[in-house]
Length: 191
Image 1 (cartoon, rainbow, N blue to C red):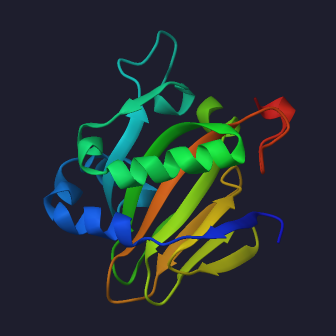
Image 2: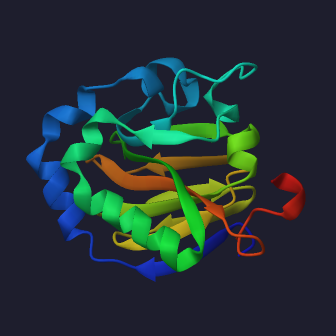
């Protein structure tokens, strides 16, 4: 595989418990599905978001490198600790983090994560809930990710996802700014 790297198998039960304790938070911020057309079939819980207000000259959040804790983060200490642990183990700094639920029988449409923020970071997916697996395509490759698997993907290429099941599939998606020479899909000329 050229565009996917499996990192680990993880016990996701602490994250599931946090999600189950706060189901109302899925609808607290619907901006992503309303404003990002390729994400219109998702629900999200933002844990770390771009720092606002945007700095002078930034057209949108895709060029903002700094991130901050989102209001919902206080309810997800296990998820944040997990992301921080991966950042330490992989040699990088944690950026944004979000739980994404892809609705049943729907998809995230093909897109590229463009902008200075994404060029400099690796994108991680932890499959939290996906009874039938989570097909994700990057370029011409497709991987059916399974519950508990942690992957890093090349989100600088065109990618998409499907949920073929009758239940929402949930991923914890987060970004790491790698230490020099340690990135998976980041090269020196992208930073």
